[in-house]
Amino acid sequence: MPVPFTKYFRIAGILVGTSVLGSCASPKSAEVKPGIGSWAVEVARQSRRGRASPAPFNGTVAQALLRGCSTRIVRGLSQQIIAERNCLEPDTYVRVPSMPNMTFGDAVFPYLKRGAHDALVAAVRRAPRKIMRVNSMLRTVAQQYLLYAWHREARCGISLAALPGQSNHESGEALDVSRPERWRKRLQQQGFRWLGPRDRWHFEYVRGSRGGSDRHVDIEAFQRLYNRNRPERSLAVDGDFGPATERALRDAPAAGYPVGAVCGGR
Image 1 (cartoon, rainbow, N blue to C red):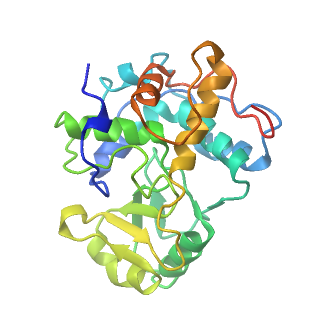
Image 2 (image 1 turned 45 degrees about the vertical axis):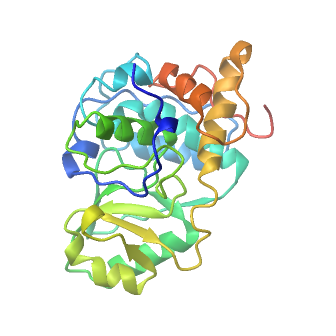
């Protein structure tokens, strides 16, 4: 069993190639439970649109670590975490619209916070002859866990990754793009910061940002979801990715829990 991530120092940012986020088999998207808001239903609908449903992966997140190099394998659980987070902070995210010069990898949730969303849309629309390929945008603690584990194990070509709870992807204020040299100037003009050669795919929105101060809400959302389904082993809902939360996440079903997000309840 890997040493808990909490024993290692915290690293900002993540470096991934297109194949890491967009390749390999993935599970059938878990259905979003009724009554959790139109935003969550839209997430599930958009994730399925235009794709054949692959065979579901019915194992745990720990088992998913050994099943290739795509975070899409935990898509069902991720949808539930996103929906639960939206219960905690309604209307936090805005869907990035379809644009002819923007494409997304199949593991991408195309949502950002309002400020980052508006800045990205402006940058892309002002360069209609350039194609932006987005490899990562909004990311859940389950996806971040896989990426960091693969980084620790020197797998999947990942040379830099943040601990769960430490990536601005989890706060909806970051994106990774292919060919970043084509977009660096335009994104910087709109308030994004490029992290440099060490993480050259990665851009973070900094103009008017809270600096990732709410990344913990992503972890809190998982903790609430876990407690709803495993009340006999309940976690402290504190937004901290400690050893108990790490163990719970490793044991979580990659395809999602039987009971998903519930707004206004436990």
